[in-house]
Image 1 (cartoon, rainbow, N blue to C red):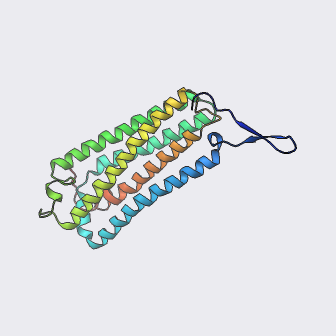
Image 2: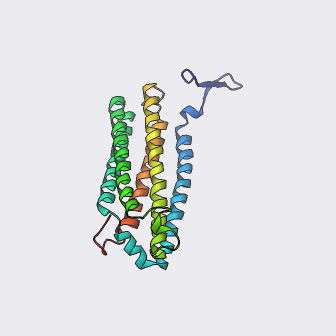
Image 3: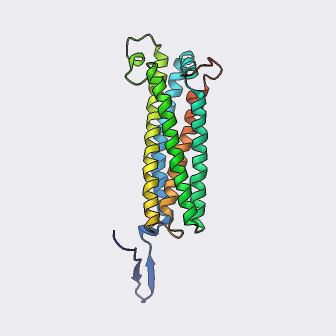
Length: 229
């Protein structure tokens, strides 16, 4: 759509004019719709967590051994990075709501930088695991390898879930860049910030999923081996 949004006016039988609520300013409808979308995300990751819990009951020792081999330091750093990024995203939204547009944009950029840092750290972690032969379709995870079945299941779920989560991080970076363009075009303003609100909600879900990923994958083997790739 080109040009500013022009509200629609309806006239009743008595000649009284009424503002028609359009989708552009339907704040509560926009929030509800996005919450419904986020619910499908929770269902998807929830199913993966249920699979993890089920296979953990079948192969508890294998899961402990596999978890102990993960790099808890890098996983912990990434957890802190995402928690800080959730703070910067929230502060940006608060700034936008009170009219501090410049400060809001700075907070979005800070969130983008933190998100990119998360991906870089995760990349280093994955590279180390790949070099040890632990990766999807790599030597150790293929049928016939010496790795116990439980560990194969653990790492298969680990790479699938962290990879899917990383894909959501990339989407989030793209959404934030798009949001910055919308702010610069004054299509997102302090009096019209539903897009900002929804992207902040999306980022909350992304960081909350990792808050569950970290203890489920990294910490169950914390009492075992002290190693880590």
